[in-house]
Length: 430
Image 1 (tube, helix red, strand yellow):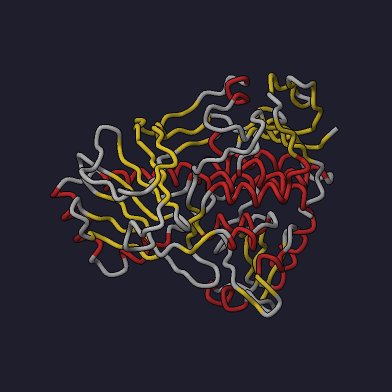
Image 2 (image 1 turned 135 degrees about the vertical axis):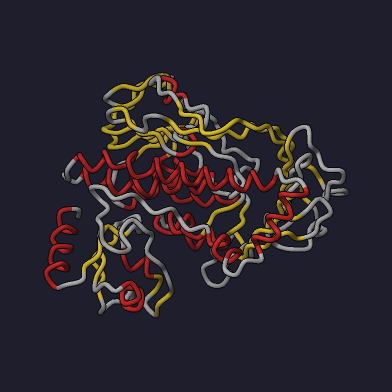
């Protein structure tokens, strides 16, 4: 009997399996398709999402197959720049572009021996899953089986719609020639012909445009079209992310338009949020911590979807709205702030206190001993003024912080007694 069975061997399913495996959890992954999906889908992750891959043990391998992305440009129909939102490059980029089959291979290298392919789930019970190859017993079931999730439908979970769906054509092209003159993402603000185009990695390029609004000229002339597919971009969240021992993650739990490149990143945040809590419960911890998965992640996912809808609003801009965008981008600090796209903070709750920094992702940087995330490990840690976090803590006016395994600040301390309280709390979560 496995402790956890994961339904779906996409990036979210493989990542949560890797995270659980590093915590010593016995996990099995079942996937109905006999081979890995060979065509590109996701192409972007922000720095916080890459940190999830780092926690899963594949950060270095991901960086080897990805490239830092310098930012986002909103452009008018003629290609003129309305606004530019820069993203930091350097040793750990704030944004990365990648070819999803490369990421899939990296993750499969990490957890491949736990994946059972060609297995179709036909039912879910309180003891695991039924499949066309027999029952698989497990204490917990994680549904990472995509937007058309069988598990979600099987459980009768409805969705809350956050906006109207839109049909877009996604075209992936290979070309030895540079089809764009900048390494970031271009988003064409045009009421009749909104579009997005970018170089991904190597000779891979992507162009997206709303169905019925194909741009006058496509930049891939002479390139090889690898895939052209129509997708319906939806904005919705499942009303329940948990039914007993079954949890929804990734597109099974939430979908949003791709205009801020957070689709896969949101799924990886699900994985990071839930994996350490499951591991804690399987070690004998309080099962009530699992109730915080939906209460923490649902509002965060909705905020991300709303941010994507704002960019979608900009993409549908006519002349007057383009002028407004251009003017707003000239306001000091606006472009810099918009370019950061930080992970939305978690609301206060059982695992998020009321102190300064609570609910936010802690920073990461390189030290002589390695990356600070790697030094934290996979258990809650109290960091203080004697640690590499000294300057960050001082800037916030606190003496210590309790950092969860998903790199969220649980709470902070300003006094010696408060630090003792954080240390005691960390011990209960270990």
